[in-house]
Length: 168
Ligand SMILES: [Zn+2]
Image 1 (cartoon, helix red, strand yellow):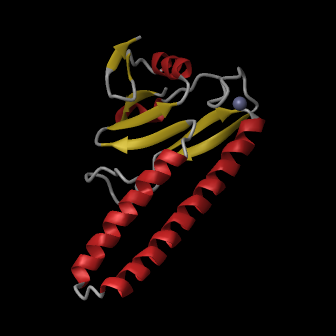
Image 2 (cartoon, helix red, strand yellow):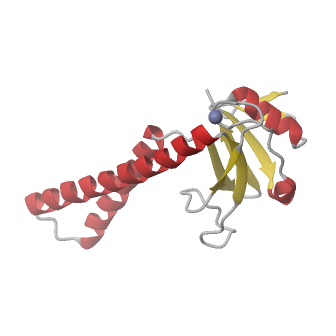
């Protein structure tokens, strides 16, 4: 399960992380990693395009390597899905002979949204950072770590995957 912690953007600068690896929860990890919200599909409309919220999170050396590797796999996976979709589309078009540009573009947008959705399900990051209106959402794979993070930042409520809150 995953647990989400919402942080108000005005407190973002003073954000504190528990001194534990975000992947394995090992205490006093010897490394850190920059995570950012750069290019999220749910970028709030009131923010400039590509506004980048960056956080430096503690992670152990071993998992830093895993995450970096995972990111590359994720990018490759995304690229292959896009190529696959494009090829499928081209075959589909030549088969159906649809001449209307808007219908074609519509189908492409729908297919690409499906690709983004499937991709987000295939690759689960240990910590997801999303910008959402006046809050930054932190989704942790580790529930305990999420609670620690919330307490450390004066937040007394966390959310589960169904968006139900619980007091901590
Ligand atoms: Zn670790």
